[in-house]
Length: 191
Length: 430
Image (cartoon, rainbow over all chains, first blue to last red; front, side):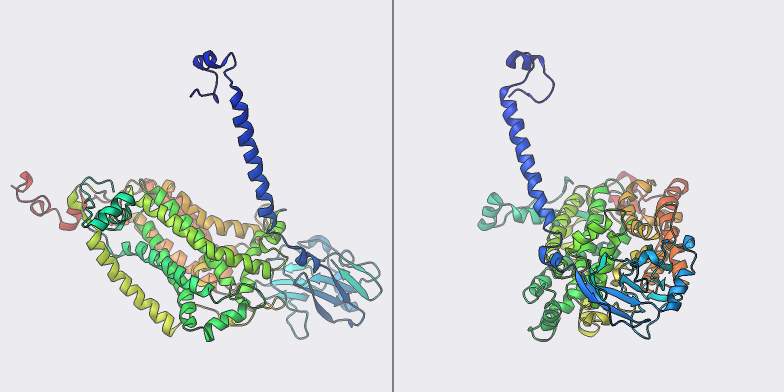
């Protein structure tokens, strides 16, 4: 067999003509290329099957009735199988959150940026610590709310303030505010 | 084995002759772990742990396959079927306790096997490939153990899965999509549990495959030994069978006594009571800790509390945790000393024991709460850990003056008694 894959040698030129390439090389390259494309195509479903399935995604939005939440009260809902904190802030808590120098925060955000216009007292966040995903305390009565009166994560000691912003501890960012919209004055659709 | 004096397999009867011609499996076993494998005559009990680790793998596969016959990897029933195994299945409690404690003992013997490698520099040429494959096995074991711990679907299972997959969320930009992809959802649920079960069943067989490569690579240069001096003559060796099958058998007996004490009398000592509470996505246990065998690495993960240049603290912790094991891959090239055994390296030996103490400190801190002064101590211990591998080890190997090595393994065993070592006929004895 003549090597037809490398540079043209004198023998190859003698046998196959000036460029040292045989017509069969085209078939070889085409066949191997198509096999490669086929293998790569099979990888796609194999990777994609790991992503959330249709039924998991179908559960990924939730309606919450926020009308009956009293100031100072927090309710826990479930959004994407994770806790969602819906908190009606008291005027003092809002004043406390607004008094903070935003520039000095690890994840600078004002309370107004974390709530919807006209509903500045309704703070909706994920109940998932941004460090490693534990559920912070502070939603239920009598739980430790940390040094800043918001939430406190017992796993690794992250303290969140009344706007659920990270103030102390290892968490890198504020508690996440999910996408949500008011579908009426008292009903919120999250997700 | 490549030594010319290795005994050759002789089939003794017609059946064995038939096999030897068609499929020489008995010959393979004879040369691998039989009389056909010459082994240094001076191996101590520290050389038992490879065989013990192999035994653990077999034990885990047998008990695991039995457990899989009774367990259902569905978030609705997983916790229930685990309790079903404990209460209703005949001998189910023995299978589960054997499997759970078997995992712990697997890690005990593997850690001792690795530390033996540290002290005797088993990673040095010509045994680098054995070492690299060993680190791969250890990484696979960690992945397998983590996924196995999720399967009972208790509180620790659930929150362990959440925290560990949360580590991937620390990777910039692609981290969160990767986390969702790994879990098949936004939090651990049925999809995650099911795939963890599938992989937990698969990976032990992958480990078995790499173990075969590990042993294959071992048989090319042959076993190392406590002096670190290579085999020179037949007098330095004895056949693996019956000498080391007997010695390993004794070690296995001691190991089984300890394992059965744990299984029968302290089956939950190494577990966490919280894992007997069914997984609850809305409530985190007050004190999340991984299984004990991850504690040193968990301490390294948590040691990073402030941002480091542009790298967020969380990502730093994740990188450091993986780096703590990946640095082992580079050991054969970090340690430049021509002498292998710690017995002949006075300075290296001191730092070896300091490293062991450092790992013990990290182990303790990994199980402790994440508060001061523990966090500060983990930072110091983490710093020393990397200092040891990246600075101390290379420097020591360059400046150290090793003690004189014995001429051969035989001389190390029998002393420089030339008459005993070389026989009465040798010119040196006369």
